[in-house]
Length: 486
Image (cartoon, rainbow, N blue to C red; front, top):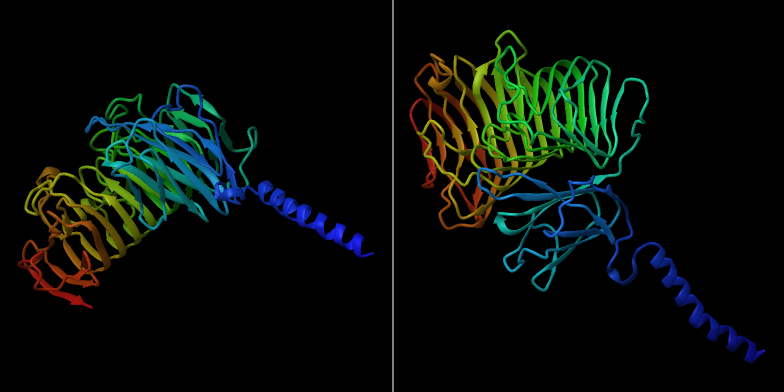
């Protein structure tokens, strides 16, 4: 009996650890090299996959790399996408780029660098990350989406379906009321999309690419709005989710005269040219932009009034996004002001890895800022708030906030507007200090077109709180009720 028990124990000492090891291996957990989560990848179509720049794996699965244009700087950049749920272990290698000065952004990730060519990090939920070996030059942007649910099937009623592969229609894709445009993973749609009517959806994991269309190649609509890479107009209950917009030829994603629009997890990879604004919200209300990424040469969030007979710009919320401009503004509200009102606009939890590398002083007509409020033609801009804004400085200067009603001669406006009851709270600048000043510039135009009521709370540059006596604060004439609070 004793000998029998000893044999059982000896066998258990071998079998149980082996059984445990096999279970871990089946779940992708062995050696710490693979996460336990689910990863879904989509092969890039022929001619789209970029080899030789980066090698990316997620839980051991190869993820294909795409290229976006950055013609103004003459430097391309790269992106990749996959779906996931649970823990994901990422490995990035680069046969071409040195990682000696590598930054992984945002810096919330705990990265492990192996030598000069390999980076590893993990995440336990979907994310967006930038692997930047040389600041804004040649980065790799990683989009880890949530798992896609309830994807429509080809041939279903009211579904315009594009499967994997490159598609080159000879005219813009038109989506009408009640229809869904679906772009499957691995799809690249060459051209543009125009949607109108109620209940339109545009979703999937595919790419809409405008790189074959020359700048402003489709012209403008009847209201002077450029026909864009993706435009939705004259509709209610608009929904967009999951897609990527690349290499726009004009404004990128336009929401014009819409009521109730929801844009989630949309990624914009532009910077091909100026005038490629990422999101233009024109004469629209009840708009949510959530969990999105955008890189563009021009403005990222532009709130515009193109036609005074259309809807007001009101009840807009921009939440949990990553925004990157190369030459313009992160938020520009009011450059075009032909709207009945501009009010109740809120941005919160915004990460800015890169802002304009061009600095123009506040008095310049084409100044550059993180936030620019510039109402004109008697427009009262009110109840605009920005909360929890994280800015990464690379040492270059940028204007933090401009609240400055103006007469915009470029648009042939004859009068300025006014600003009422705005808030900037918990804006934090970190990174390199060097030449960063971050002017906060507040000035009215005249007594009738003034700035009344701006609260600044918890503004910190490199850990130092900004107060009314800080050198960066410039409060000019025709202003009142400008308050700093702890």
